[in-house]
Amino acid sequence: MQTLREKMELIGRLKKRPEFLHVAKNGKRWVSKGLILQAVPNDLKHSRFGLTITKKVYKQAVKRNRIRRRLRGLAYDILTTHAKSGYDFVLIGKTETLERPYSDLQKDLKWCLKKLEINA
Image (tube, rainbow, N blue to C red; front, side):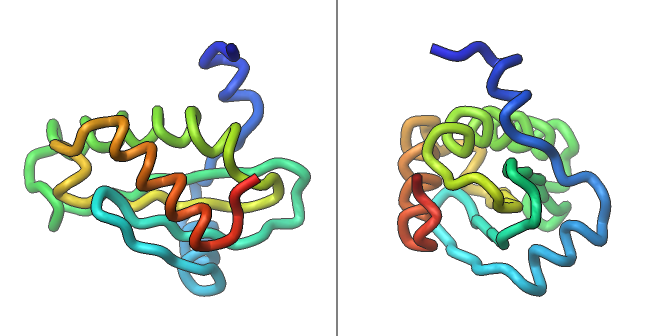
C-alpha cells in the first residue's frame, strides 16, 4: 500500500486558470451524483488534477474547504491507481459531495472514469 506522499508524487496539480479553461474547453465531461469529472489528454507522461468548488455550491468557506479536502483525497486514492496516465482531470464539487459517504464518492469517480473510457 502506498503512502500519501508516494501517491502525491505520482500525480501533479493544475493550479493556473488557463489550465482549467483548457480542460473545460477541450475535454470530456461526466456528471455523477457526488461530483463532476472533466478530462483531457495532455502531452506529459504523468496525470495532473485540479479542484473547483464555487460559492454557488456553499457560501461558507468552511464547507467549501471540506469538499476540497474530500476531493483531493479522492483524487490521490483513485486517480493514481484507476486512471490512465497522461490526462488532466478537473474534479468539480457539488452540494452532495459534502454529505455523500466517501465510499460512494469513490464509486462515483470510478464510474466517471469508466464512462469516459479513461480507466486503467
